[in-house]
Image (cartoon, rainbow, N blue to C red; front, side, top):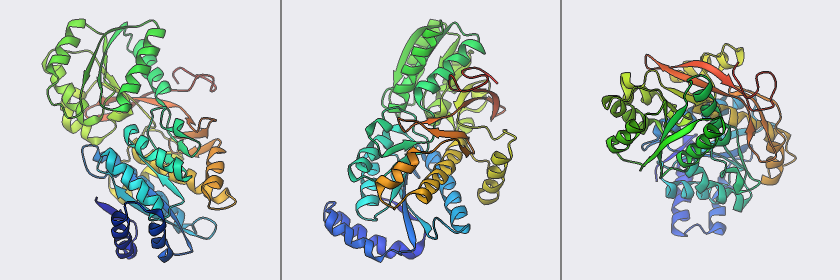
Length: 402
């Protein structure tokens, strides 16, 4: 398993612990012995993410956002006089690796909290382990409702799929004037299955009709059969709640087959690779997202400035959500009466009106974030802000456009 450590001085110790960890098949008592070398003036925080593999841009952006936040927090004096020490493992986008990484972070490294993952399928591997050991976990960007349903230790700072499905359906009906829609989803991904279901519910409730639902499996490269069936159903929009690496290919093949209606999707589209793969075919298509770099607020623009200075690129929503998740965790640790999992989780749950880069964040009774979403259009290969849609009942323009 590939591993990254935020501080190279711990590599030797971590490697020795890993040997003990693997040889004893996760025997907690032995693994706990590896904690003694940790600095008492540090607070250990874990991260697991897809730093390599077919969802690598998700993991890399998330890692960038977390690392930037941790360094800022430490430069400002840390938390209650202690520095955060980040330990990061690459799960390669593999569910088994994700489970192993989270177990290792808790039983071997002794972290007080875990940040991750992006893909809901991978968060659903890590969440039960965190719940079992009483260690709070914050996913920056897993939107499937099942993730936080695992238990009272599991939180998120992104909106959830019922809201995202509503956002996409409302945009399709109100902005695109679509009376009917086709759906093409990845049946092997929890995220995609859940989001297509929520879109269908909302779209039909708003008076629209689903003409056909087509499925594919992760790793497929030829979507012509599904797209031919979609073309025959004559939809006004095609909803594709997949990940960027599939969506770009689908867009190219759809246009070659003469499908000219807009393609619409969720936050899984968010990646610079989308335009690289999709080229001109992705222009004129839309997706829901967590923030827009075009937001003029000083909070957003200051984050973008710092991120660009360090990473020489504009931060995507995965980076922004990760940055927010880290600061929310820091804020909770700072208020907690101790570093126990229960004490930290209690304070995460009390997060209210946190002024984040991705909007004002309140954690509700189900440990989900209540916050708005934006719709972006791909123009000349760049995501461009179109509109904001708020949760229903959340002030002026709630459930509608601003």
